[in-house]
Length: 50
Image 1: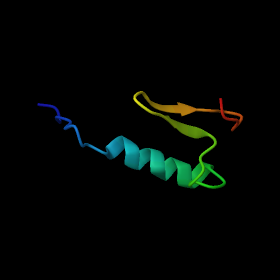
Image 2: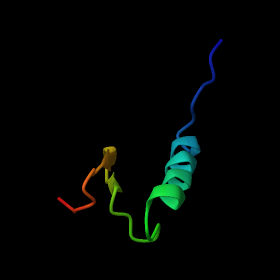
Image 3: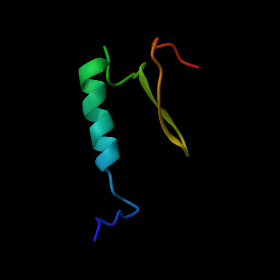
Image 4: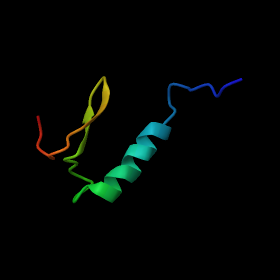
């Protein structure tokens, strides 16, 4: 019996937000962890947008 994930489970979003607060100079304008709409997240090691 594993945990079932609902359509509105935000646990990944919460963890990404916490990571951004730690590694981003400005978490409101993320450079290292960027959101890719319809896909998820991508890590940009050099902090430059693609």
